[in-house]
Length: 373
Image (cartoon, rainbow, N blue to C red; front, side, top):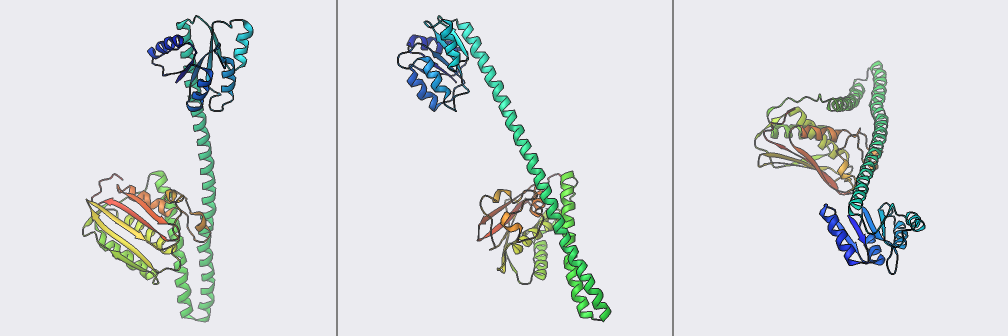
């Protein structure tokens, strides 16, 4: 937008008409004081400023405008019929003006200058946008590098922990075998098996994320009984976590077209997380229903919950909630993989949570998904 400042109404009207005819948006002010008030409220690409005005003259207005951080990049063209000597023109430039035109105004010359300033403004705007975009991209590279280093550190630690445990149980097994203590051997074998399953799960997650990144995560879709799958998963969860009771509410009552193994992976991830992040509790609630051709499954716990500012990031790759990263093991990729599985089924994942009271993770997928995989 262009601001024209002149105390002569005829000049304002004629300049305004000419510039509007060439599709420029125009605002006007009839005094320096009015111009300053408008500059405080609005943003202008260009100010066409009469020098000789009662009260504040054009030079004083320009000097005041240059002190506003919001307007110091605004171009100023001075117009003057009286002060045409070199010393006044020089003063105009030193006051912050970028050009000085004497009256009577050559409208063709003024239009040429206005178009030039607009073109320069657009070029500068684009350059600034490119610079900001580049800076954002650099910061995103830095953040990605930091996350990668953090993930490598976490992965190394998480993989080392079960390996160290297995090594310890093998040494205990060796001693127990030599003593012929079969009961102790069975106990150590069971504990070693648990650690090996943890290790296998970590490696499987790493392989899955590698396949997602390379576009090679494969799906084997077919019709299967989702209610049967959910019941089986709940039974397995109870066997491995007998202190927890999973309360199931509702049923699908139909078959689902999808990858049964991958949907099971999502269910196991949701339930495992619900148990992991609910210390001191003993109940999990699972809701399932079908509405308008879509399957809805939700897992709700009464655990530690998630703060509002962290909720948008829980399905991000490598994201781990800060206050839980030291208390709970994990690579921070299970939910990311789950979200990708559901997306590839044409569905969506989500979470509702109240910090300190618990979380509810859910997914929705079409009963008959035709999404390409």
